[in-house]
Image 1 (cartoon, helix red, strand yellow):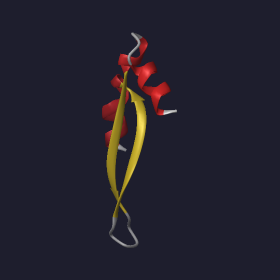
Image 2 (spheres, rainbow, N blue to C red; image 1 turned 60 degrees about the vertical axis):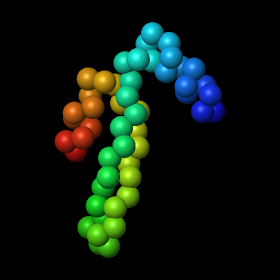
Image 3 (cartoon, rainbow, N blue to C red; image 1 turned 90 degrees about the horizontal axis):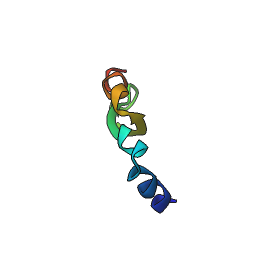
Length: 50
């Protein structure tokens, strides 16, 4: 499956996407977890503000 994603990202339309990883702190334990998502390049700032 990873090979498909890499091959897709190398196409002309694939360059419009970014993989964003955000650290999220748990309110109960205080531990950090990571939220990972593929978002369009123009929506990266909106994703990070959430």
